[in-house]
Image (tube, each protein chain N blue to C red):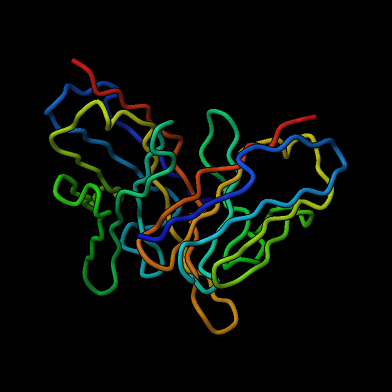
Length: 128
Length: 106
């Protein structure tokens, strides 16, 4: 079965870069039917989608408008994983960060997308 | 971006009750609506995709309906393990989530 294993530091200083990795087992980061996402959750902002990377003959990335100037999501095909980098963090970036797979479903001749596999979550605190 | 508004924010119910949670989108999202269940300290779990399709392995007491802007999640007969927080999420455009509905034991 597909599993996602997150790793990375739980404490980041303000103005520095938050870096997390999500290792995939049971699927491929290069899958033509999945997308690999980062989501965060905080009491003040709720669940917030940050961005995704996916492969459809070439690599694509999409980022949330709220973080677009600060975020990079990269696939690593050699290690079958993907990463999140969030620059210039502030205390407002304190949250539980999740990676998740989005799977494509077919229903009534249309395609729909759902986050069917999630990592275990990483609590990241931004503090000096 | 598309705003997702859930109601109620919290709900008290008993085992065996039938419960309905509502999600409204700020504009039409067709059927690009998913429902998730989250328990404390755990990641969300996909229950329903495409507004009304049951994810594999999810009990049939969960059902979803709606299209356009108005959607519902119904639990036909609450079980002890169903007490959790439920979220809707749209995938019509940049992904957004509702604020959640906390389902508590009465």
